[in-house]
Picture 1 (cartoon, one colour):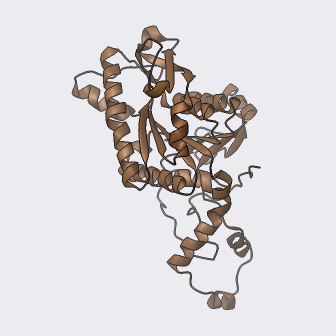
Picture 2: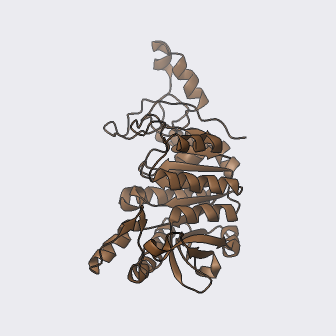
Picture 3: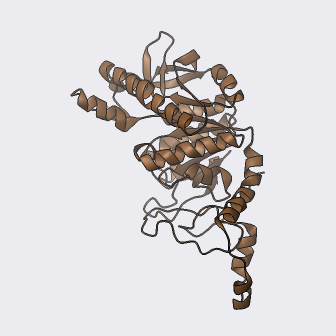
Length: 346
């Protein structure tokens, strides 16, 4: 049974220890709508009842080692809940461009793998593709928010995503202490593509026609982390550029994932798009559809929401759109009640 997410004050340090500590705001100047991690029950009760000066004086000092042990202890129920479960993470946006955030994501994935979860990483690489196209003197073009992918662009997309970005992520995960296996949708027919409806304008932009997760099962069973580039081919072998959010959602459904997580450059779904503090922490499919109908969800958030809804309809238990700009947002989402964005339930 999923616990409902409680409202907590913003900018509170994640994973607080279960003994009273004065912890400074880690980023007091940030304009982001950050949420705190789960506040331990003991600390919550102590906060609600002010301590007398004599009690404060008698309280033992919290050592760094004790703090780490408290944090591990608080994480235990969440580790038990997700142990052995598959979690599909779509990686992109600011978390891919910032070296510090990239390191945070990689370390989070390795930690989750070490405690028994089965993470799958699906990635894009838009900024890197743009950079290489410009080096070749080819101006990137977009249509309705999607990359126009002519033959030259498709070659660059495949070279950059499969040959450069994918192998870089595999190497980083291996260095961090886990074992990653790099794949793209073409490998073992993992993803079979078909042309997008607007193929005349978009070129080689594809949709996912079919997923065959056979290749992923032994990789996950052996404790390895699949790293998947969102490039696929159709029945005739023609390569297609597939939206990474869409690929992640379809893969999550095919492997029976417990959770789909989309790392984004926003706090999550907002009740008021102009108010970063209006984050919707938890919502069901009906609720999010009503928000789309009312225009509260619009622009680039619509395809992400549709991807989540489709994966939930195919059996994924929860889908989350989280703020990839927050360090360790994956751990916040999985190992705390508060999460790091919006969780959509079926």
